[in-house]
Amino acid sequence: AGGEGVSVEALDNACGAVGRIVGALPAEALPLAQLLPVWLAAMPVRADDQERANAYTALLGLASRQLDLLAPLAGDVARIAALELPRDTLADELKHGFVQLLQTLAAQPPLLDAMRSAAAAAGQDAAAVLEQA
Image (tube, rainbow, N blue to C red):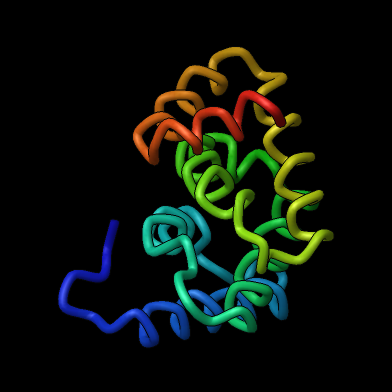
């Protein structure tokens, strides 16, 4: 994903900041078609638990309001979830939200293959996590 030459802290802060913006403004006020692919490519949040909470709370909130915007990015969502779900530091409500989102996206057969491929690319354990969702 993105971030070569950028510190982990700066990337985490950027993901969290975008999350705060996405959470605070109406979707119509943002260029989400351009923003979402870049934002998701920068994830997962690597080190900062507060920025992780900001980014993923916003992502899951957006998914609950406008799932159609995330459907084309199902592979990125699966990659992020597959890397994050095994973390002990991910809050239970965020884990639950990711599992629900994966189940919703996986119910759409064309998206399921993209999700499986992305999770497998993230690692074998990630693929297993996706299969459990």
